[in-house]
Length: 231
Image (cartoon, rainbow, N blue to C red; front, side, top):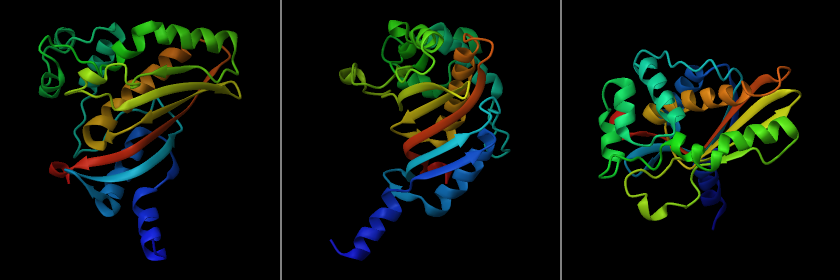
C-alpha cells in the first residue's frame, strides 16, 4: 500500500475527534455541518467514523435547532417508556397517545422492540447493580450497562441496538458517563438518544450520596451519519 493510499484511509476512516460541547444542540449543529462537508458516502448515508466528544452539561439536552424541529414532549414520553422496562410499543402509545411509525417498523409481530433501551437495562437489574457498585465502591471500573452483546442476534431483524454499552465512573466526586455506540443517525438517533442517556445519567446520580455531583457525558459513535434524505 502506497503512502498516498494510507493517508486517504487515515483521513476517512479514522476521524477520531475529542471536542467538548456545552450542550447537545451545540454538538448536533457542529456534526451536522461536519458530516455535510467531510462525510464519506456509506450505503444510503454520509458518515464520519470513530467520533467521540464530551458534553460538559448533560442536562443541557434540548435540541433547539429550528430545521430539526425536535419535540421534547415525545422525548419525555420515550424516557417514561424506557423507565417502565416494557418493550412493547403499546406502552409507548399509552404514554404518548400514539406510536410513531419508526417504532411500528422496528417492532416484531407482537409489538415488541428488542432494542428498547429500558428493557435492555432493566434485565438483570442493571441500573440497581450499577448504583450499588458506585455507592459501595466509588472507584469501580465495573459500573457498566450492557445493551448490544449478541444475546439476541437471531432476533435482530429490524431493530439491532445502536448502543453497545453505557459506563459510569466517579472522578473528583463527579459522576461521569460514557456511551459507546456502533452506529448513530445524527438526525433522529442522536437527538433522542442523548436525551435518554442524559436522563439515565441523572437517574443514576439521583441515587448516589448527596456529595456526588453530575459530571460529563462522553458520546462515542463508530459510525455517525445522516441518511441521504436529510442531506
